[in-house]
Image 1 (cartoon, rainbow, N blue to C red):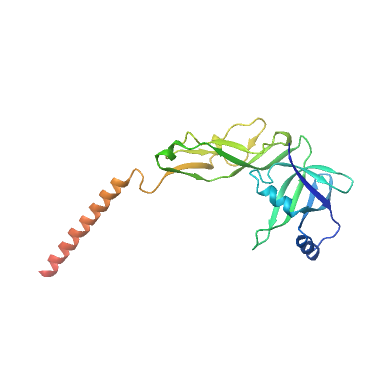
Image 2: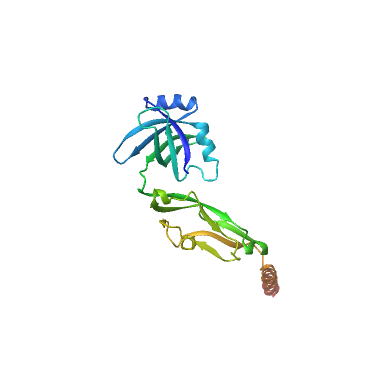
Length: 218
């Protein structure tokens, strides 16, 4: 079931009106879609903030409940979120109306499970992607994609091509893009080699200095 988002229609527009809305704890929004007259809305800032703090955030499909107006319910997805340039606040949201069976192109968050084998040897899991772009029918859109990293050893990785195949879902993010890698911490597995190299370099530097001193005396 899609997450539920509540809204009310609004008549006003412009910077001053939007400023007053935000001061009252509201976020200006607009709903649009193919063959659909755009609808100006206001969202509750606390509700939006609460949704964004959940694991799935506002990804995927949302059940928009408009508490006034002719059409009450809409299946929507977030297309754009505008944030304040200096404050941690959302100042505008674009919503797209989705029809059942319509193909959508959107980002889906990745959920990582397990502890890499390489982590037990001192490796570190590095994340390169936290979401991927997919294309699918609205009914097939997953809320998240599970990525099991437990079999990864030091030096191994998962690319988009290695993500699980999902029925009806096509990955749009390039197949060769890195998702996660397990890398060795600096010095792990190489401490002795690094110490030997440093000692050899120091010895060579000392010999060169000694040779230069002898030439100077002569």
